[in-house]
Image 1 (cartoon, rainbow, N blue to C red):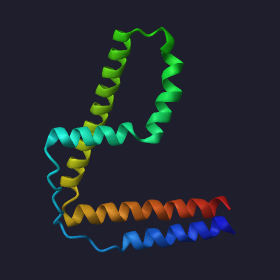
Image 2 (image 1 turned 90 degrees about the vertical axis):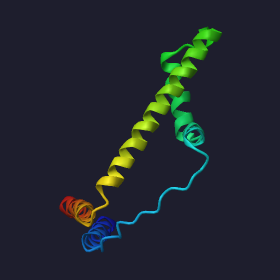
Image 3 (image 1 turned 60 degrees about the vertical axis):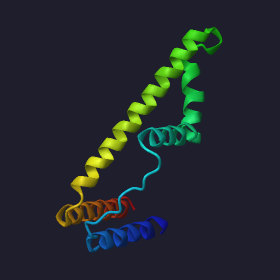
Length: 132
């Protein structure tokens, strides 16, 4: 019964997305928060203080690196490489988001996105019904 109710809810959400009106192309520009360096530092601190990231490093790092045998220079290198990896990942995400923002400004692109997401939800609902 819960599966069928969930499928009906997915149908409803998919239909609402399919029929959703297209938003205006005017998007508020982000406020100035002190420049690129401050923004980068803020993004890094948010990512580094994320509990999921912390737990990932606590579980992942000891598997590949014996932390008791690391000297000062090796630990510094590990920290530099970790920060560089996190920053590269965050820059890639930011660049992709900026590109997606430009691509989705047109009403036609927004309508396609709404209809694609709605179709996926309706498909997921149909899959749930088929499995019952």
